[in-house]
Length: 188
Image 1 (tube, rainbow, N blue to C red):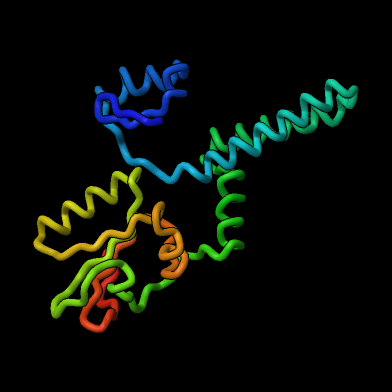
Image 2 (spheres, one colour; image 1 turned 60 degrees about the horizontal axis):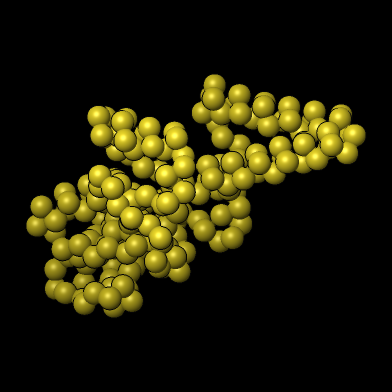
């Protein structure tokens, strides 16, 4: 069960996470949330690291120390690469896997507004693909609405089939849709 504390949605596991408590209790209130990125690629990278380190440990326990050291050094080298250059090999593996599963960024040419739960109108409608954890998505939506634009949001976490259909790989993605569902402008 999730809850809210100080504007932050937390999971009960965080009650036992000292770095989480420090971040959400001390750092975030003073410096703000900052931009939130998709957590799936780094989470996948961490899972791959845990698997490699688990295999390294099993190798040492089984007496295969050369395999254990090799796997441990691979994880250390990839962690050093990520720390010094910002290149996360596990994240890139996740992105390649997403492309192989059919999730590709694409050019949106036409949008069926009725499929999104919106009615066709004479004027322009902005269709924004968003995610609940995307800070930039909320900011863009506020800017569009304050500019007087009609906005229809599509939460990709609840409607992944639409993200796949329209080739949305990153959020926020926003397009202006004119009469007949034709895209007239790519906004974000």
